Image 1 (cartoon, rainbow, N blue to C red):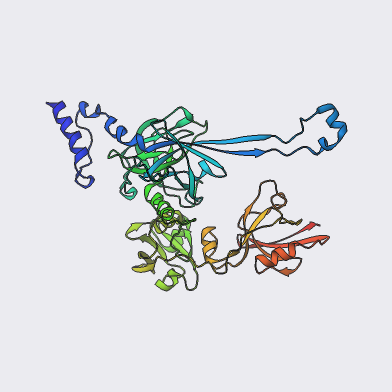
Image 2 (image 1 turned 120 degrees about the vertical axis):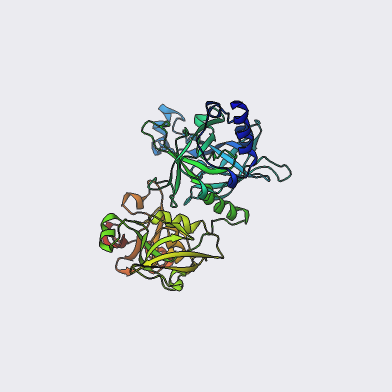
Length: 464
């Protein structure tokens, strides 16, 4: 009888909607022995293996231009090609062949192949890469074939203790399923992306699982596995997944044909409330985020948000730290409104904030500087509210910002960093990218460069 009751419980769990299911502990040994096979059978066809590669060409040693060296060493100095490979997992989320994976699986790769559970392989096209969320969207097939897919779960409804399964291709051994529970929610300081609100699980996740599926027992996608904490390189039971609600945002932008993800702009600089800060504010517990400054004409300013306000919730969901606020706000769709709960002077109030994208004025004019100057190898752009938001900089900052620095470049060797704002070169003010391009094309004997970094002004002198 007990076994019959256990089977009926399993059937009810598979048939009843999630809202009607009552979370409870197993009541018998038979219930504990119940299998995940039905869920696995549903999930695995939509989880894929991803093989990415790029060909790198090693530079020729200049010594081999000398006939003397070629006489003794022959063609060993000829430039050689080296293939760099990346291995990961992915999830089919569109029957038309849309696949999501981690951005770090395909970043910098020129060839991407996707292998399905039934052994078929497809060449994939990268539709969109979002470094900030560490999500990439790929496309396989020509649209004529229907692929198996996974539906999204509401990751905001996930609770600590929920059973989950992780599916992926660890170490390239082939598709593997592991089980565990949700160990924690809203994990931050992981260092993987800008919107840190990870789901932590003890389901075994290893190298190669990146981009794979974390699913609930309804067979729905809870998150995309992205990182592990490990001192050995293998699983120690601390893995992290990007919540499915963040994945939805990136997928929506890819479906619209956008080349970058469109997210709403709040327009204020925020600060996490530490225990010391909470004591100064007269708070019993350190919670929420403090508004440090508000950009003029921003959605926050128009809604009445003021410097010194404490943001405690977004659409009724509490925020605990800047990362939590960024996640809650960034997962709201552009075009509507969000209800932001503020604490001001001990009194709570709610304001409606427009969910609009940040203005990109002035235009970015991204430029990789190649001239013989201290900036050689730096990619710079005009700082606008959109770019400041993208780079997590103060919303009020303007000027020319360093967006990227090439490895091994002159700019990197001289100590320039991503986020530096170039204020002046040889005492000439730098107002936009064109100013910097013109100045850096000159050939002075000495370079005097003034930058702003983390609110501090730094002036350095370099030889020409």
